[in-house]
Image 1 (cartoon, rainbow, N blue to C red):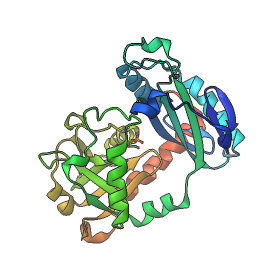
Image 2 (cartoon, rainbow, N blue to C red):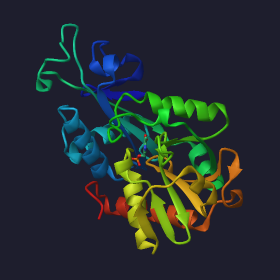
Image 3 (cartoon, rainbow, N blue to C red):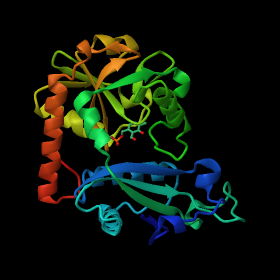
Image 4 (spheres, rainbow, N blue to C red):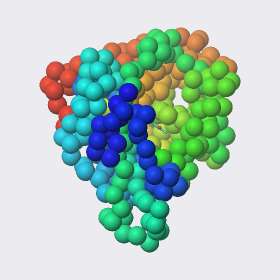
Length: 297
Ligand SMILES: Cc1ncc(COP(=O)(O)O)c(C=O)c1O
């Protein structure tokens, strides 16, 4: 496997980062995962925009041009023979640093960040989850993603712990709530609840990562005629919803058919979830045909 590290395409076995990189020391850095469809990085501009916003909050030097990232991704996919398949690509920028770096007082512009990209094929498992739906486990509020939930930082421990707990108990995803028991998001996804023809997803004001897929799905749902609202839901709303699904760049749209062992809508994948997934795939194909890596309308 080849990876992009510090501007060079190298063998994964040769990839080394200093333990004095503040990404390693403090989780000081950001990352993003996007999906490439036969070499096409879908919604690349939106992913880069979010990374740029996060980089600004962390005062992390960052190149905000989608063209630059498109070039790096293409080189990476080509080197790994992933241009003809669907691939998940991780873009990561950590603070950088050397043995004598003072990570608190040094002007961030004087430390060169470490840029790291790697790619893997999207597994067949993802498609099965979309067809069959998944069960989820709700977690206590201690697992919510901390003080800066809008930043997908290298400090990802709450999500990882939540996911490990859920997987150990046979669930695909963990659902995070706040102290008032309002739904926030999945450990690695956003959540939507459908009731009648109204689609509801928690507002970012509650403290969550506003996913790129979430925004696109809201747009597509409106185009299909659904009423879409950003509003709070409670845990009990999950079991009484007509349909529930998760969104994320790699998983796209995944139906939720059970929560904490109770079936949702008889444990069957709902018709609107299927319709939205179809619309999502059509949107991908449209963007790919147009070959456009700048923002979607
Ligand atoms: C906590 C969290 N929420 C939501 C998402 C979905 O984001 P996106 O649609 O941008 O992939 C992710 C993705 O990994 C995530 O980690």
